[in-house]
Length: 186
Image (tube, rainbow, N blue to C red; front, top):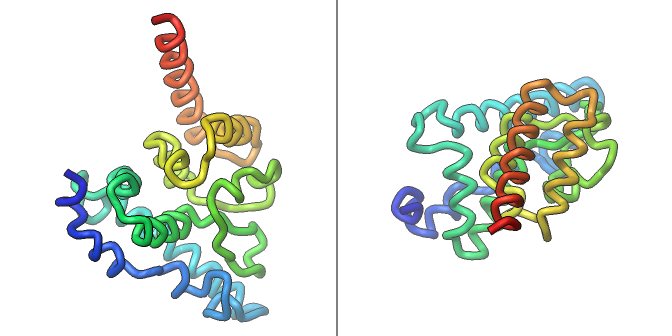
């Protein structure tokens, strides 16, 4: 099971709050202004993308992916769950497109509820795709499935979202519609 795959709950606390160490929301390296601040902000964004790639099968193949990390939310103690949520938010890395502004960690659903979020923010589309496919958003913050549907609608309507992300959202919408039809008809 997942407990064996991820080890004891104490292991989660050893993962560390990378986002906090990287300067998110505080006076860390991203707090500097000017050219140096921009370079650090861009570097932190690249680190988040690299870590997401590494976790999503880049280092351990199918034995450790973003999906298994998201599934771990269901078997963790609440204090360790919060650490993992912070790490997942770092990997998604929703940040202003203006890289002169530092990245401030915020709950994922809070960021995604902003109707202009795709126009004003960058994020890792691969991570968000996995979060949608594996229902990680439901586990993280969403109070009901309509919030996730609102995010999917926003992604479909956004001109700045890639065609592959939109295709994933369409596939998920079809699956949800089929599940709804099967549940309502049976």
